[in-house]
Length: 316
Image (cartoon, rainbow, N blue to C red):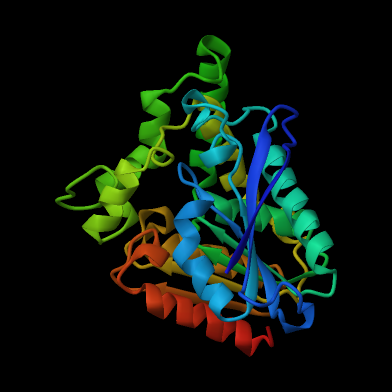
C-alpha cells in the first residue's frame, strides 16, 4: 500500500496534527477502483500506528484509509510530557475538529464521490458517535468499536472532579484518583491479571507490546480525563443522539469480556438508544471471551471478515 504523511494545524491553536493516508497499491491513479474511504479514530493512550494490520487488510480489499494521532497522543504530541494531555475546556471540540479537518483533506485528494466510512475505537468510538451528531452529512456508514455507555452519574462526577483538581493543581496534573476512576479501574475487572492493562487483550504479546511502546499507555492528565468524561457523557445524550440521521447504517462491535462496554451490556444499551432514537439500521456483534481491543485478539481475522461482510452488505 502507498502511505502519504500529512500534517495540519490542530483546532487547539497550538499543536500540529500528524496524520496519514494509505492507498491500495496501484490505485493512486484509478479513483474509480476505490471502494471507499475509511477514517479510523484511535482510542486513548495509543496512536494510529497500532492499527496498521487492520489498515493493510482494508487496503488489500480496495479501501483507502486515513487516520490521525489526536492531540496529546502519538506523533502529534510535541514532547513526552504532552502525551496524555488534552485541554480541559475545549478538548472535545478540538478532537472532533481535528478528525473533521483530516476528512476534508482526504476528500479533497480523493474526490467527493468516494464513499466515506467512519470507524472509531474506544475513546475514538465516543468521538465518532458525537461526530455523527455534527457532521453526518455524506457519511455512508459508521462502525463503533469497543464503546460503552457509562452511567451519567459517573461521567458527571468525572467532570466535576477534574474541574476541581484542575483549579487547584492545574489541568496538566496527573491525578491517581482520576486515573483510578478512569482507565486504571478497568484492570481490576480482570481476574488474576498479569499486568494492569491485561484488560486490553487476552494475548500477552499484545499487552507486552503495548507496555513497551513509548507512545502508548500514558496516564491522562486531569485535562485529558475531563475531556474523556465529557465525550462519554455527550455520546449518550438523547438530545445529541437524536441528530444522527435515521438512515445511517451503524455497526457496534465489542468484546464480550471488555470492561469498557461492561462485557457487552453497555454496548447493548448504546445500540438500543440508537434504535429508540429512530436509527433504522443498527447491528451489534459481541465476541465472547474477547477483551477491549478486538482487532488485537486471536479472533482478529474473524472481526476483520465481519466488518468487510457488513460493508459489502451495505454495498460498500
